[in-house]
Image (cartoon, rainbow, N blue to C red; front, side, top):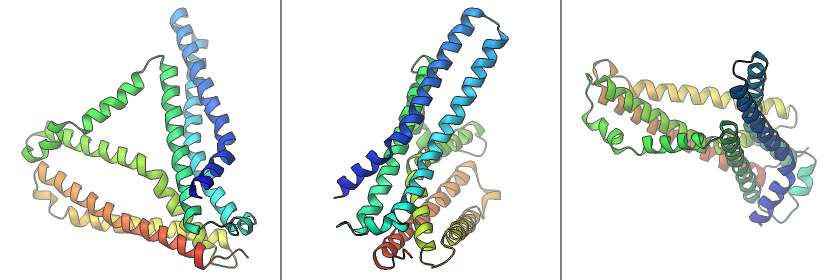
Length: 278
């Protein structure tokens, strides 16, 4: 049944995203043509302005495409589960867990597909596979044993090694964040919507208050953890600073994994036991 729900989610949403994807590809082809014309004409103010406009439009549309995935997923969860459609959806012989998982899976699929279309568009606009080569460079940088083992031999006087270690760690965090962000964001939004619907009045405002409150509390917790991790940073070497940051990041990851797991379970409990469609 989960597969059927997921198929229903994808079929219901594909038209919204298809228009955006086509727009991204058309702009990418236009940028490529404008670039070739600029090379042929040499210095040409009109061609340069046109190319700049096309690149800005592509950047804005690409950003909007990623935002659309998260916004549409949130609105769909709210309308399907807690508005008038909820009376039908909750009468189906499907568990609340299946509803939640199908929507999370659908969000992740569309987010990754948007990423793939974005990379394809970049390659078309560039007229080469250079953007893909950039991804391979990131992969090689992350898996570079010299960088990963450098933390053992790093010294406070070795500024180059310190910077390399910092960059490696930040790149790893960025990659991990990219692959987990859509799921984590959707878990948070689902919980806020479900919690807001426990109230008979002002459901949307309560969901917004919940969202703000969770983010505020999360930032405080994260700040406390990182402050404790860096309590002896003043007299530490570069290797020790990196170790402190790594320890703080790992503790943060574990704490937030527990928080998001709790929100996921709470959303399931509300939909299964405390559903309020009034």
